[in-house]
Image 1: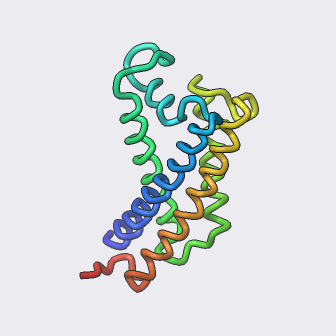
Image 2: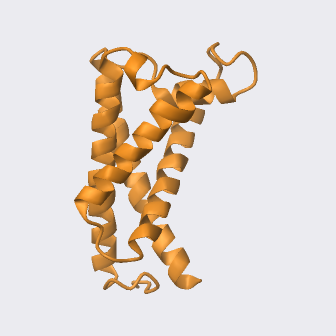
Image 3: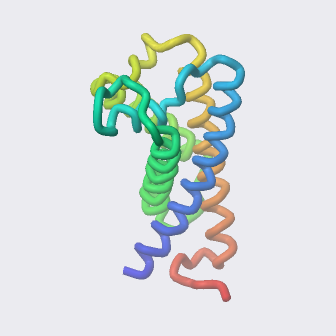
Length: 159
């Protein structure tokens, strides 16, 4: 059980750091006029009470928190896939792009939150794909650093 928790915790930390890096790229894409509303904000808006398309008080904060939680959860899952071993970059990139495809070609448009990738505004899919590449790269890098910092043993706590 300790092994499971240790590996998942390192993955969650990696996922949180990777989400932060990805969010910086998304914000830059927004400032460049490529994004429109940020997807996490739109998802939060749809999940909050009231009309799913009307702006709501606090949706930006809820969106940021939900995005961080989703990124940390996906990182924890990837950490478990790696089982405390080195995280190669290519599988991490495939995992991150898979998250993007499942989300933005799957459940997000099915819930009517944003159009699918093929029908979205021209800039957003490019920014989001790049953001998920950044997520995958940073996730692999963080997991590898965390594993080395603890001698590869996910249950060891450095004091």
